[in-house]
Length: 148
Image 1 (cartoon, helix red, strand yellow):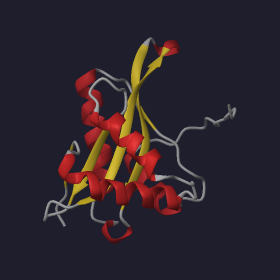
Image 2 (cartoon, rainbow, N blue to C red):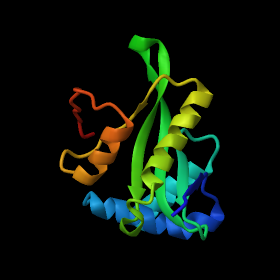
Image 3 (cartoon, helix red, strand yellow):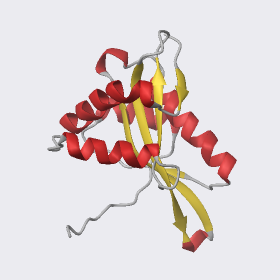
Image 4 (cartoon, rainbow, N blue to C red):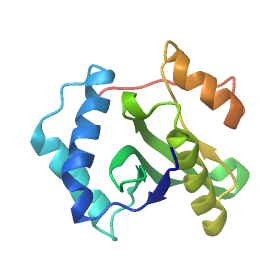
């Protein structure tokens, strides 16, 4: 199935909402409609750092989403892009939507002069990791969080 990628607009809002809720459920994150409204507001506001993309099927229906933002790389004296969220509807997996979304983020990064696109995933997210292994280089960095 051919996939196109574009920035989401008001016509994609409901489908984006359903995809993002499914993404949260996949990672077992309690997420409210208020939280999704806030994230949509960030994506919809050009002054915010968060950017969004949707993958559309042949009929123009969103089947996947990606959220990304710029980050500063002081040691490299450069800027990169961080892919915060990537999700494809289970019915559309294998369609090329994930690859198309990642490639669109990389193209945006090239346009902005970024030196890297970086993301994390769970160790047990085997299906996604098999795609990521084809598209990017796995690093040996370990991530830590401090809950505030």
